[in-house]
Length: 113
Image (tube, rainbow, N blue to C red; front, side, top):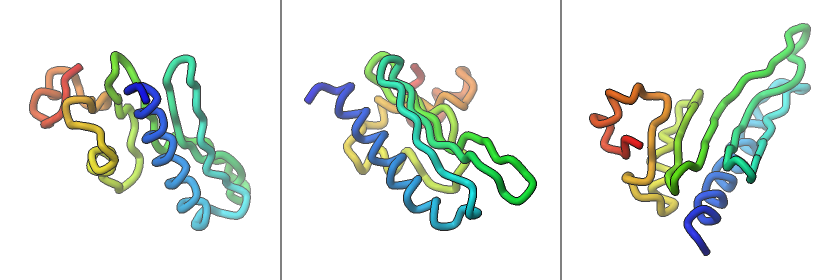
């Protein structure tokens, strides 16, 4: 399996597992949805639906695969996502914390770009 396919599978397995677990604690009409765009290698989990009179639509997690590296663009959870990626076989030098400013990435212990 090539690296891109492997990383797609790791990300999607993680997102689907997260969505399944979080759905149990969501309000009745709020769904945790996984969105996958294979053409642009962009993957996301988000909340969508109605919580009483309030409409919920917010990203939870967002990943991109660029230049054979996983970019974690958004993590609105308490989970240590990078630890879970590494446990699934992704080396730290293939993980970029996209939500960190470029000048600070050198201090993260992960790839800079």
